[in-house]
Length: 303
Image (cartoon, rainbow, N blue to C red; front, side):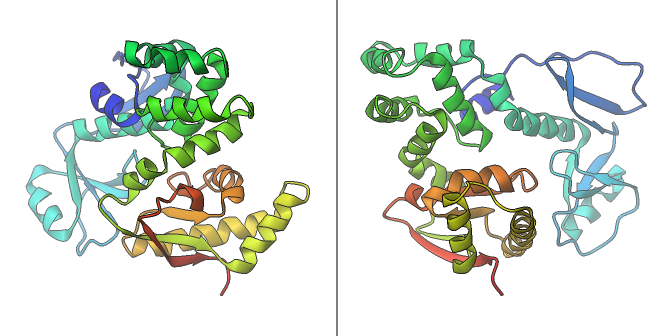
């Protein structure tokens, strides 16, 4: 699992330690990081978790619960119901896979917290002698190791892989002498990583079916950002509600949870919307490669 995480994200997570806790109820487990709980759930050995992806055709007998990783409705069933569950359209996994998936999900979600200065230095050391000049041009000549850490954490927080350190450093070498703000540098790096970001959601697709903002709503948001840089509470709540409704419609059509907006709105909208809609991905129009076609199939706001 650690190797798979490193391939997907770009660095190795800490070693996972397992210990008994007699204070927990039977079959319960807790996942902790740095001594603090980040998740808990229940796994029933010898049984199977039938997860409802949203379009099942039958009911199952068993203990009703939720998939701990993604919160989907699920049922713990005996092995003799496994085939029936699959026929009905459930995703059926064993108890150990439930725990592993939950752990992997939390590792991704908390990956920014696991990326310390030591891990960043290891990433730089891995680049080898042929990239030594590039590394030295950026660290510490253009930015500090701490600023680079912040930029990488920003990328991880929005599920952007940091495996392509060469592109990241090339971008910083170009812009970091004029721009020092980590958030602005993150935006520039995202544009350089645009093809990889799009590939993550639309592998092999030339036409990208995405969510977009209603033109009037977009204008209101641009004016708000150009004013005092903040949304009024009423506008914020309306935007969140409309975005959630649009996301449900979009995913109901089998499309990935991607919203594409103006470059100037991307960062603030992502921070705001992902507070409640954690799995939504907000992309900038500038991050879309020229050889891909955007098609807005779901609109946030409007009528």
